Amino acid sequence: MALNQTELNVGELLKRHPELQISHNNYNINVTANFGETIEGAALADLYNHFDGANKPTTLYFHVPLCSYICYFCNYVKKYLPQNGKEEEVLDRWVNLLIKESTSTIGQAPWVTKAKIESIYLGGGTASLMKPHQLAKIVAHIREHYTIANDCEISLEGNPDNYQGDEIEQALEMGFNRFSMGVQSLEDDVIKAVGRKHDRKMSIDAINKLLLSNKPFNVDIIFGLPHQTANSVARDIEVLCDMGVPTITIYRLRNADRQKMGIGNVSLWNNDRVREKMEAEGLFPTLEQTYQMREEILKVFLKYGYEPSPCGWWSRKNTYPEGNIPQISKNKWERYDSMIAYGPGVYGWLNDKEGTILQTHNVSDINRYVERMENDESPSSFGRMLTGNEAISTSLGFNYKSNQPIQLSRYQKEFHVDLINDEPYAGVIRSLLESNLLMKLDDDRLLPTLEGEALHEEIISVYFHGQIGQFSSEICHK
Image (cartoon, rainbow, N blue to C red; front, top):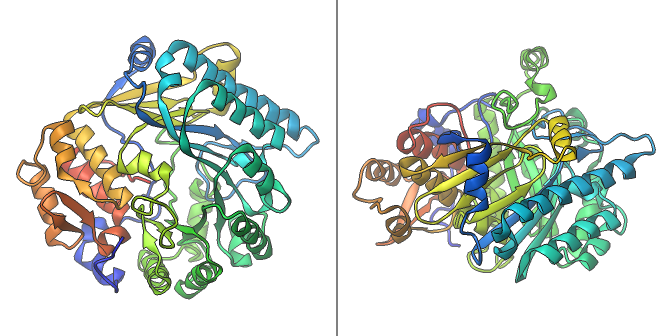
């Protein structure tokens, strides 16, 4: 995708947009909207079970909530995998629980087996902690019970310490054709400060193994962490680009308390005493310093010819087809296809492409999830029905995040609105165009600018959710 700019001054950009200045303690990542009519129990089950999803593009997600260590910043749904000789027993249990939830869903919602699965993602937690026979069991279950597209993208998520042996070769034999690896930093002092158990050498070794697979993969890097500087983060990115990593995903540190929002677990850094002590010691970079890091990162990406698609995911040219975007991102964000999700704390959604979106949420308490599954009860917590401006704002947010052209005709067809002439959409689109955060490609397409990509999550929160969806709390999208 051609970029319309070659330079970016994020500091000046933030000064021009004070409404987009959000501190790391209020900066949250939440792929689903926190508005919409709440639906529970039998009413939610009935809507889900009778959804018309057969033959429609869909993505499938399995959440493995286990980690061999807990990062201090992590507020996702996860728990520590005990290192007491019973690791395999615990992993076996979770494989069976996830398959049980999937089997139960299939029994109640037969359309699930007929949905066209175009992308599959095993995440967590740390999905690659599973042994080969455990991964193979889940893959076999999926292949037996779901309709898998011939070119389905099947991704496995892990950390550098999970890819030190022949794990990648074994995953390839099972049919995995894309990988995701959480490196977060190549600086050993930063890695130690956030509680991770790998080091720079392990990351480099794992990347070299992934490169030998000749399959696409992404390496995650977080900026805004303690002990990072703009120069040190830029050096990390330069190393990765020089190695030829296909996709480098950059995330700003988010220290919002997701547990209080009911969508995650509390992290160590969410603890008031810990956070206040770290802030008093000046360990968290300022907002200005954080965005200076992003600016330096982008200079490296542009130097090496990387392209952002979706926002925050920078890839080498021709890494992926059709817009150089991973299929998982095309399904979830560009097209906002339905997502079937299993595991504790997962969120999914059913999109009828006729103006109505049903979000689904499982219980985020891991023990409650286990108890419900073992008692043959639904792990569902609640759902949200989005219609009207709430559905439009969420769809626009996802579409903007994808950094693929926003088709005006799609919104006319699905929502019966004209984004250019109907309010409140027209005012928001006009503001983004005038602020150079959005550009017009032709009469029927819009696209984020490089400045819009740099602040995409803040834009989604403030402009789409706030001004169109009328949601007033801090919210951000991945």
